[in-house]
Length: 167
Image (cartoon, rainbow, N blue to C red):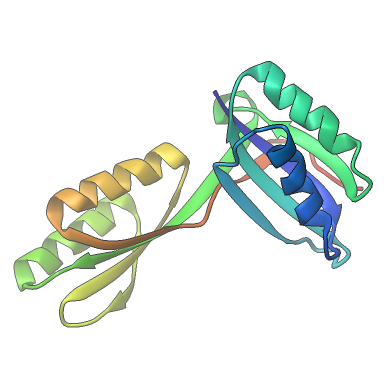
């Protein structure tokens, strides 16, 4: 089972290391890790995607609360239940002729993605969606053109409605 854990922590050297160390010490894998400063430059927001049983995610959350550098921890629910998650992907594809370029442009329109770089034989596309939409986009574009490179941002998430994280 997938779990997105959102953490509000000090924006200080070593804070992220302590969080990642907690996962490592307990043998939990991190599938995706995204971290950046918030509107308050003293705080960072970290989103971690991990897989495991529900009780394992609860254990991780409890252990994270004990870290001095951590202010808030929230396990985000599935999108249908009250959480929103997104990921960005950049995909570089080979477009050696007009037919390939036209097919890739058409697919970009269907997926509502952006072509962000173009040269004579290569298009770079940007797409934002949830993880399964990203997987579908990569698979579909791979059927039309040779995929040369894929870069995924990692999952970021936020709760729906009136739920928010503040220190």
